[in-house]
Image 1 (cartoon, rainbow over the protein chains, first blue to last red):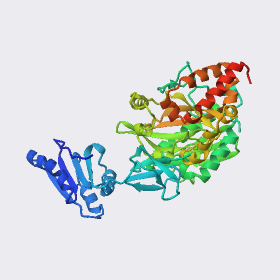
Image 2: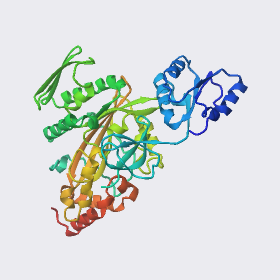
Image 3: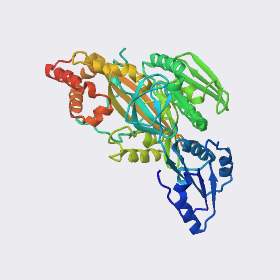
Image 4: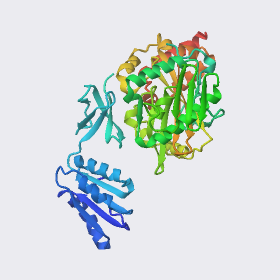
Amino acid sequence: MTEAVFVPGKRKYVFCSDQEGIKLLFNVIEQVKEEGRPYEIFKIVENQDCLELGELLKKQKMGTHLYVALPYAELEKVRKTAEEIGFTEEETQYIGYGNKVKRIFCCRCHGMNETADVQADILCSQCGLELSISDHYSVFHNAFLGFVAKL
Amino acid sequence: MKWINNLESFPYPFKGSTYRYSNNSIPMKTPLCVEVTPDYIEEMQLKRTLLNHHAERCYQSLPHTITGQWEIVELVIDHLAAQYPDQFSVEKKGSKWTFNNKILEEKQEFTFGGESTFPEEPLAFISRHVQEDLILMMQRDGDLYLDAGQLCFPANWSLAFNLGMKFKCIHHPIPGFKEEGLDDRILQFLMRLEAGNPWERKNWSLMAGDRLDTSLETFDQWGKLRKQVTKENAGELVHIRVEVQKLFRLPRTNGILFTINTHLLSLENLVSNREWLKQFHDILSELPPHITDYKGISLYKNEVLKYLSEKLESGKVV
């Protein structure tokens, strides 16, 4: 998702972002204020772990809507934390910014690779197989499937 | 290796003179989730070797699937014992079960539903006794998820990659599947599956070679054979691969057991049946590129067609 969308009528709103990401949530925060709904802002500083955020999320009641705006690379650990606590897809919005690095799952050795350019073939960093990057995506692995480039 | 020589027992998959993707499931006449064929011992040896040496490739599960796995153990054992009483038996004293595989001469005592009965998970245990690959789909949030499975004989897909994946995402690579709305219709069909009313379908593809274990993980090895097909060797080298797939609702967890029994038959054997030769020739000639591409036939389709045409013209049965 590239833009946060205000979902009206929620019990409470939790915003989680860093200094840069908060700008992407600004409009929604304004709307929440206008509606007079309860909200909380959780600031993430660089390389912070998710323990404190986890504690905050665990305390939330049903009907809380979560917005997260962070660099793509940071987004996933927050998503994992929120999912483990029980936030569903419908209760969350993740807005990434910055360089989008994609994770590539090697079809032969299951090794995980990272690349910014999905057009080009890569060599698996673990088994050396030449991989073409498919558009087959796994939410579970947060990765695209890399398949045999040349027979 | 010739996996099937007996044409009569081959699950011939074609009807009519064209083929398209469809939900071709039918209610099962004999509601059995597994089958024992004459290749049992050979396939079990192959399967166990794969499970022992390539555990990560052949077995995956998420922790919340254990109850569903026990349901599968119960269903499979009950079906084996009922259908093949000379080969399999089970004795149940409360939760103390004794399963006897008389073909392999193995007796296993265990506590049904118990946590530390086997050195491995329940699904892994029972999969060592059946030729079928066993996939467990769990249903939640209006969707089906591949949450556990034992897969030794995949048709070019990866269980490890697909673990935890939603039904539509699993089928995302199939061209036209989404565009034709098939993914949604089949998902809706599966989610309405009822316990006690199992369904089955056949799926087919062609392959160069006769490996049962055509995993995505080993495609770089076996895929190369596709380049070696000629009209001269197609009869021996190319095999039609048919999966008999069965779908059972598991009443306790509301999961779905999906079993896959894979059969291989060389073209040589296939075309010895004149009607099959004609029908398969018609279907393959008419098959649109998006299907031949996905089924991995494109590289050698023309050679196979030449082979089939020659057989048709010669009018001789091999």
